[in-house]
Image (cartoon, rainbow, N blue to C red; front, side):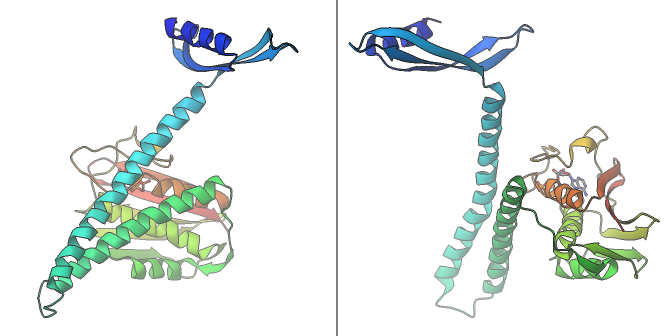
Length: 286
Ligand code: ADP
């Protein structure tokens, strides 16, 4: 209060517009950020005649900015980790450049590639989200064979030999959809299964059809997800916080999937039996 009065006096003496953020307590005892603003009116001799002021609740805006700052922190950290590894790998390669027969070189190049791919995936997520926020997600729908599309996804995913992706279901199911975007959703489900259920060596992709829609479900036998976390999985920035593990990611993958499926007028969801695995599914109308 003392600070506020001091600031006000300075505005009066200096004939300056007044602006200050303050916290006011509401009728439930909760503090909320408000913006106090006042402009002054002077007469022809330059004498102060009036003030016009406003007090606006800006709490939602302040909380949004806080979340944005936190997100930028996380995103910078996530990007910095693979870039730091990449820098170290390039330094090592630089030292070896005189001896191209060195047996370590292929392994270092492979590691460097993995780190570049991580940076690439994170930046792609950021660009996807900003396009979605601007309402720029346009679909390019064509008739697609879902089994073939799943085959393409499995083919494109960079996975270890130890994982097996098993596809089941009708191979003739056709649907009008944006092939690239649907591939993105299926790829996300499968890469999440590998990332968050690394001990589940088998991943099932099941394709089915009802009168109204077609459904794709990806199941792993990993640690699963607690029931109370499930409703939030498709929220922007949401990550199930497991302190014993650290996985790279921005909590955007499933949010992007949900936006893509929403745009196809479809449904998306997850079911899980903690300890026994999870199934992520989506359906789109025929
Ligand atoms: P990110 O882009 O950070 O990987 P996602 O939006 O893809 O985040 O996933 C959100 C959260 O859902 C993750 O933090 C993870 O804990 C959880 N999750 C996603 N898929 C699985 C899975 N197959 N098994 C267990 N947890 C999963």
